[in-house]
Length: 225
Image (cartoon, rainbow, N blue to C red; front, top):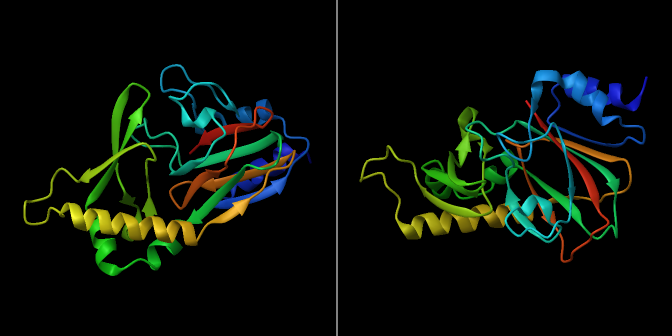
């Protein structure tokens, strides 16, 4: 069985996190196997079934850079962002740029209870792709999943009463605790040719951990539900 079909079987199993080397990935075959599960990346109206993520001189799209890119969710310009992110390394470049993951349920389990209650009242606004798009910071069963923008701002959910509306200090303190926990629970994945990472981005936050520009680094990025 080819590496592509083995990977598809892993996807079908519904795993939340998977990492392995696949030297014979056929991305077009995987697109065909996933079919309607694919969420187009690069834009809602002009996107592609997958994208080659590499350094481009476009400061408006953090996904097409290789410098540090803080904790974030992908596809926030969709009303329901894609559930899964797949990254496959075509060229690791200098191998100085890692992808970090932090498991959401672990991150939230170690922040202060009061801060968790504040996070439940917040939404994250993503600015990009021609608009301002917002999503609740916490979602899913018992608010154990997360969506977070790295570029934008935070505000309270729109249906809160004045009495329930958190103060600026409460919001700032809760976010400080959240980012502390994200940083402390980061697990780093180093890229080599063929390395393939799949994760449920509602259950795992990710960031690009880098201090440099690397024009040789190339990853396939694919989203699906």
